[in-house]
Image: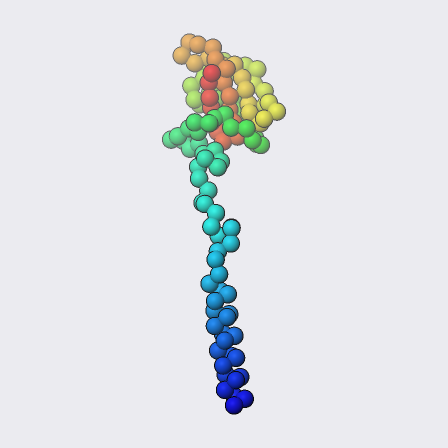
Length: 112
């Protein structure tokens, strides 16, 4: 009789353990996956970030920023300064017009 009770108890414990492993998922497991709206898209040579210029820690040097701005067809780049949001800003000429230009940490060049 003792063996039967011990065996029954063992079966009940195993069933309880199995049920505990199939508990409902936690919040972190059910969270929606990150979307492109959660963070800005990074520019590639073939695309531009529509939210540019994007504030952030900019590691481009002044010379690199000017080089990238000029590579986008801007000339006469003057007053190039890194602002407190990590965006290089300057005045430049393109298509015969003087414009304000910005260069962010993602490599986006934006004219206003």
